[in-house]
Structure formats: structure tokens, C-alpha cells
Length: 71
Image 1 (cartoon, one colour):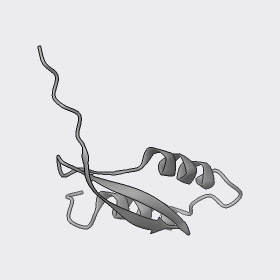
Image 2 (spheres, one colour; image 1 turned 120 degrees about the horizontal axis):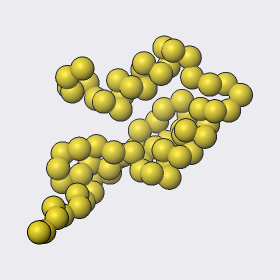
Image 3 (cartoon, helix red, strand yellow; image 1 turned 90 degrees about the horizontal axis):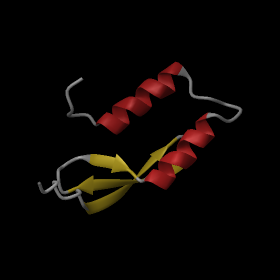
Image 4 (spheres, one colour; image 1 turned 60 degrees about the vertical axis):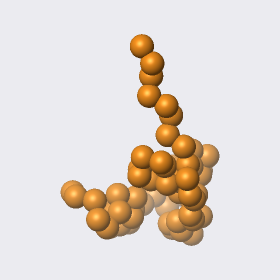
């Protein structure tokens, strides 16, 4: 039984959230993902002295999900 090939990054862009630049990869499947190391840095920063407010968390979710994805 053959497994499906792993998706590959076909493009990258930079997303700036809360003063941090995060690399976003567009995969050949159309999915968008944040670079793993950038995501680790971002999560670590969220646990710092000024965690996200509820409004910031909602805004972040909208940015990551994208404006055209269904809720």
C-alpha cells in the first residue's frame, strides 16, 4: 500500500502579527501553513508578560483561517 506524497511548499509569504514576522507556506494542496519554527516563536511570545486579549485572539484566528474560508 502506497502512502500519499507529502505536500510541498510552492510559495511563501510573510504575515506580520503582533509585531512578529511569520513565514506562511502555500502548499501544492492549496493549504496554507505557518512555518514550524516561526509558530513556536509566536506561541512562546503569547505566553510572555502580555498574553493575547480575546479580541487579538479572534483577529489572529481570522487571519490564519483567511477571509474566504467558511467558519
